[in-house]
Image (cartoon, rainbow, N blue to C red):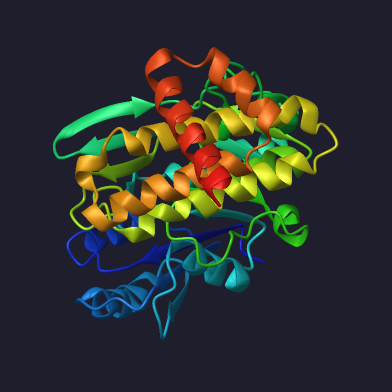
Length: 328
């Protein structure tokens, strides 16, 4: 069994894939497994990966898998999870990169702590600028209860730091069905995933380890394009709210889920200029419908405690949903 499986989806990243692959080589060990998943790229990415898989096989265990149709990031990661054989698992995106030796330190950290999963800080790279982003949890280097890290509802917590590649995960989580993503989600795929981990895993830790470079501002990235695929955040957060509502501590956890959902809706509505006009209209309609579906008691409490600008925007949506219902 490999010590670590690294799942790396790629899609149309010919400009960045060589950096990603060089950083994998700088982290390779004979007991590490690199699973390279091409999500039906239409540029030169597949040719780059084929060459890299052959070259990396000298220093690590490598699998190269190519999708016949494009399925999105969640589906590509699931393909990698299905193929992974390692004792520990982690993720890397095909346009990001790693500091040399980072994975050896990551494995040493989770082995020493003996917990289900660890979360790490990361470095955001935007052109030449670099900034450190830390896990929003103060206690470091000790094993903790993941459920206790979901709250408080009115503060940024561990479930808001959803990056799947910022950590490592014991294989027992995969065996329990906790590591797969909701198939087909094109964006926000890590939101239901991180909530499920924190609700259902037994132990986790935060470690002060830097080594993942997260590339922002990539042309063609879904975070930069206002097309219909970004609206998958609605489906992702519907899932978060639905699953949290079924939790044994729903009365405590739902306010956090609803507040986060509302904050994301308000964020997208505040930047309507990036959306295609038809998609902006669809965003408003879908957001109003989402407001209507939320647990109304929890929603009312959230709107009372949010800042005036966001609360006003969301109340207008709520009235729109009520008016549409009355007209129907």
